[in-house]
Amino acid sequence: MGNIRPTYIKRVAIDLLERYPDKFTDDFEHNKEMVAELASIQSSRLKNRIAGYVTSYKKVLERPT
Image (tube, rainbow, N blue to C red):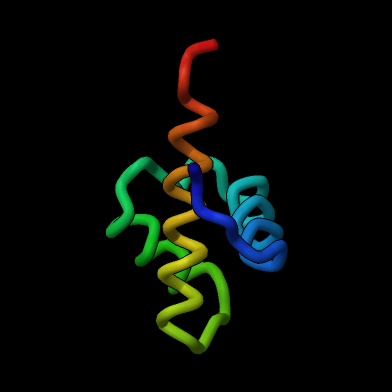
């Protein structure tokens, strides 16, 4: 079973990936820094959740079909 994330986390994460596809990798720590730099989000918990979704989404996109 996977994690269930709210729609606003997914929406922000996918929007950031569409705007800056070359800025994100499959490394959580790097993505956390990029989310803090590119988005104006005050809450560190929300930044971490968005960075976590970006990381997992990026891994799914890179998976061979």
